Length: 355
Ligand SMILES: Cc1ncc(COP(=O)(O)O)c(C=O)c1O
Image (cartoon, rainbow, N blue to C red; front, side):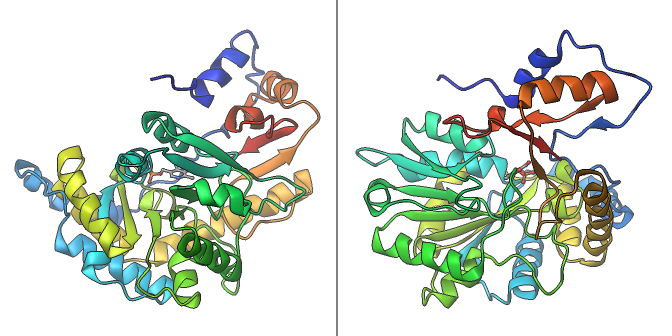
């Protein structure tokens, strides 16, 4: 399989002959890894259940975890999910890699579309599925809003959106997501929204919508052809817990669950208990949001950028993203990612991604 070199490896190569100014110690602003301590109550739930390491975890996940996730979706998005409409997963990365392989396996001319620039796993999944890829280019001109022509939509078997978006930090409204739901029904493709940044928002009155809500608004209350992914990694500053879920179309999920029993990446039982605690609490997420908000206030002062609706990314326009990245490292010991490492079709040229 011919995978692209991962962006962080490309970055290491770009910086290998650059000597950083070690007078500064700001660290890496490249990786989407929250830099806070995982809250104590989550760590305690993990320790209190450590004796359960003796058990094999079931692929379907513990009822307590599923209930906590259903509770989160209900509280946050006012969507009441049935147990058959959600599967707890080992973070969302594994799903993004294996779900397309599952969904595209039987297709004659497998075709997947995803937003560009993108989280690199989408492309890995396309390659592993031997699928034709349609890049949904997000540009300043289209306000970073995903659009495809009817001709392109006709070809799609799976479409992955990612709003709130990594790395552009763009958001999509409930109405616009609803339009995508209608397209998924009209052209009969599986529509996924990767919503792992939905909880890193900054205005209670303008919270990112979920594709699940949009589906109901669009009259598709059974979520036919619609799936969302969400994750605890960003919201709880706990990427090491590896807790996420896929939710939506029960018919697709039933078949995917069967596939997952073979994939075998069930979450260890103590981690599931800790994850259930994390999904059930909002106070700690509120605390993290406030810190990110302060960071964006600083970014506004320093870079003159507006705070986005959500995410912890800045997609900063620069003249030459490679030269900018090298100079920033050399002069201030700060690592950022050239936008071109995260995009195809020359799209990230003139941008850097700052986490
Ligand atoms: C857009 C996007 N989707 C998914 C993930 C995967 O997150 P996890 O596997 O921790 O749930 C990330 C992580 O950086 C991401 O940026």
